[in-house]
Length: 305
View 1 (cartoon, one colour):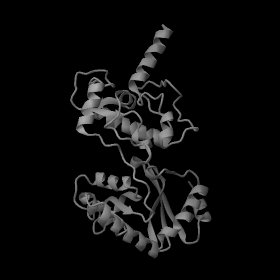
View 2: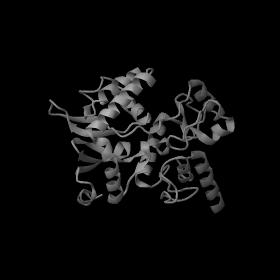
View 3: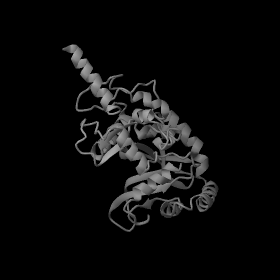
View 4: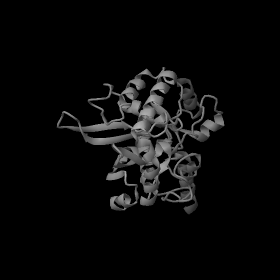
């Protein structure tokens, strides 16, 4: 993405300052001044299915969203969302304390401005999952300090659909563990049954608001199709591998073996990056279904012999 080309095609009221990336969250931003507002507008933002790849697309997007960054529109947004949280979010008291601060529509330091909470990232994720657009800057100077730190800003872009991960009760988790015979599918072992997690074969990084399902009433067959059991360490490893795949379009490799039971290492350009249909691009990867990958590889080796 070229800053100079982008500046040449946006409206006069938009000043392009910097293009940057928040790689851990798979987010890309353009730092801008729009009218009298200064901040960061995401143009690669999984939560809202925004994946802009060219200057032309980003130019069009910025010109369209400019309307939301006037003083009157920002005031209208704050009034609407303050009312919404007072009426509809009364049960979200901890997250509401964070949202109330973010309604200042400015950069807020995690250390200095947001509520003192060791799990602040979960609260920010909750707000994103409710459909709000937040900007993150991980290396901004903290006012009144010589240090830099993470800052969060709420953007006055209209609220989208509620997204988020599926909720699993303790009873449901136990049912999954029982159906899958408490087998750590990565190790193909049931030696250490404690700490096993029901892992969604279809990585949550590719979900949209239409992907979630109600788990509690799933049939045994559906559970076998949807879940596998791994420990927390492998679960975190898989998250990182799927995040990298999402960013680079290169599928994950299991055990260092570049083998796919369907497709190859490159994510197919014919398959969308997000939503239910994107699961087709995961099939064949060892991390998607470890047991099917293992059986396919064993069959291949047996035929070679």
